[in-house]
Image 1 (cartoon, one colour):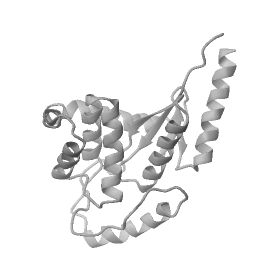
Image 2 (cartoon, rainbow, N blue to C red):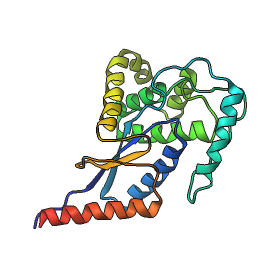
Image 3 (tube, rainbow, N blue to C red):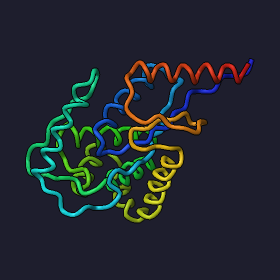
Image 4 (cartoon, rainbow, N blue to C red):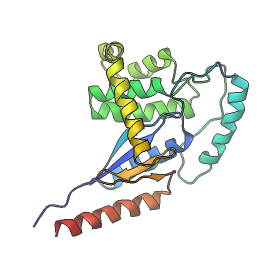
Length: 213
């Protein structure tokens, strides 16, 4: 009997997207529930370049919209922006730090990925600021020298982030979160209910079983 392949999913996400936080929590739960499922997170840039100085009060008013994803069933905690930190300048810094963590190892990436989202949406920390990113890196007890090395690898890490963003567009992602099967050629854009993620994984299992028969 031929062995059925694991279910591999590719998720495109941005650390400044509140809906991506919901998707991340749900897909992580799916992985815990179903050990045959794996999710690879790839970059999508909602704010690819530093913007002109954004007004903090306008940004704080924008974060009132986070109440919508926060109201969904099984959503993580969101907090409308408080304090004087931020707003974040653009999407690249957290993606680059996540990629640097991935160079340390898969577990380091997984923890950094979750920590960036929580720092931004729950703790109102500016995850585009180098000091914040260094604090998160140290909190996770990742190798200190590897954080410094990310500057040496910046062009390489940047190329990786941009390639993933372009890939998402090529597969038809019009926004985030977007999800596809690793061997698929189309994406589903938008956060899905937990039960829909389960059914999607089950369909992929069934398809793999037919192919292995």
